[in-house]
Each structure stands twice: as C-alpha cells, then as structure tokens.
Length: 124
Image (tube, rainbow, N blue to C red; front, side, top):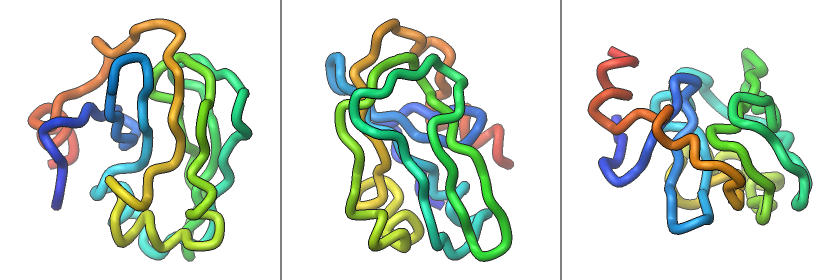
C-alpha cells in the first residue's frame, strides 16, 4: 500500500497535501482499496466553505456509500471534475489523478493531522 511521506492524513482516511495556503485533498490508497470499485463521487461546488470534520461529499462504490470529511477548515477553490466521468481514477491513482478538491484554508488545524507513519499504525 502506498502512503507518501510528504502528505498528511486523517483518521477518516483522507490525505492532505499542504502547499502554502492551498490544500489538495483525496482519499488514501487504503480507503480506495477498502471501498473497492468506485462508481460515483459527489463533491461540493467551488466557493463552498466547510469546517474541519464536516462532510463535504460522498463516495459510492459497488457495495457501499461513504462520507468524505473535510480535513481542514476552508473554502473550496477547485474541484477535480475529471473524476465525475472517470471515478476509477480514485482507484487507479488516488494521489495524483484521483484528487478530489483543493481548498484555501481559513484556519490552521493541521496539528490534528497524522503523518504517514502514524496513519500506517492506525490502519494496521
């Protein structure tokens, strides 16, 4: 399983790539593996704001539907619309083609995030 060291993680299985005030979010390799074949993803619209821990969307696999949780408080500045037509990108490449949203953080809650070692310990 792939869990890059340069990312942060949530206990709800989202990954976070922090670049200055912009944050890219997706689900982890572990999460996509547990879900199985992803068939539909519902994401928010650009401009919507969420607090850390709030549900920002859902992901539907063949056997289940799961909520997506906002890892940090902020406003949606970009949505990966290519996964609407190609939800398999999340299974095939969750850290690149399968990213979901980009946010502009409104407060730095990053101390609540896990590093890759802590996340791996969580899922084992």
